[in-house]
Amino acid sequence: MKFSPFPFQVFLPIKPIPFLMGLLVAVILAFGTSAYAQEVADVSDEVLLELYRGARVTDVVDGLVTVGYMDVGVMDPSIAPLWRDVETMEHRFSGIAVTVRYGPTNRPMHPGADLTQPENYEVYRQWRGMWYSQLSTEPFGEFIKEGSVVVMDNRDDNDTGSTGSKNIMDWQEKGAVGLVSAGGVRDIDEIIRQKNPVYTDYSKRGRGERIGRNEVIDVQRPIVVGGCTVYPGDVIVADSDGVVVVPRRVAVRVGQIAYMELVDDIKGRRELFEKTGRTYDQTVEIPEEPATFFKKHGLPEDPNKP
View 1 (cartoon, rainbow, N blue to C red):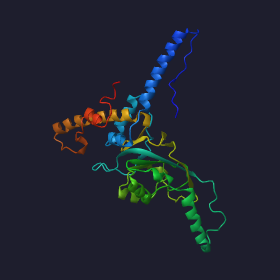
View 2 (spheres, helix red, strand yellow):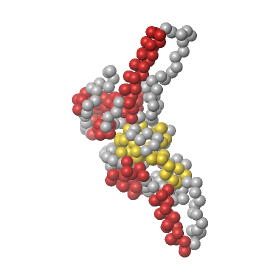
View 3 (tube, one colour):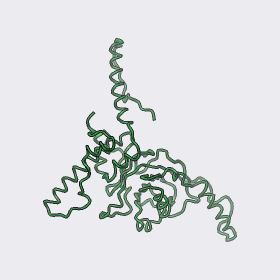
View 4 (cartoon, rainbow, N blue to C red):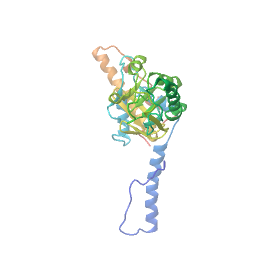
């Protein structure tokens, strides 16, 4: 993506002398280059996964605001966890987005055969196999690795269960830590029983299988889920407060700010636990000091200093 260092145009009523024009351009370019360098600075997935491990949505949202991203990346509250376990916190996750988009098919329900007739059962099976192997496949699977979050845009793809209890387990075996979907999830009882972390709009769940209903359109391309644009490689954080998407270009600084806020919150709550006689739990286990943690991973010790 090409970045423009000029977010606005400058108009002057008179033609400046060459020296002043050069100075003006130099100042603007210096500002733009600095902003660009800060925004596109990147680190490995592994460092980001460590930085966001245990992150909370609220702290990440605050981090986004701190770097100028007001109300950016916060998914609609309808995208919520299918289940919660506040003892183990297994419903929470953070990871790197792998994206896929499914859309409604524009093909006939079947090209010719009358499927109400028993003798056409084998024809149906062939048609079904073709659909799953050619039209509504899962090509994003090759991009899943440790720490991936499958983010699925399947709005308006008919009453389709684009994913279910088995698919999700297959993705987890490859390393996926969770699923965020606009809808189209089925086998919900099994998903809950298996404790597969899934965030979706429950009112948009799907019942039918993909054949005759949807097709895969895009893989590892920008998609929209819950009112947010998600690029492959963005950071996804999900807990009972919902889902937040951190654009890759600011993921380092936002993650550092969120980590600092989390540590401060833990320390404050731990003091209150002690004052009120509460038994310590995992939510007040003090993590590594921010400066030490950041230095260990090759990050600036203070993300808010140049």
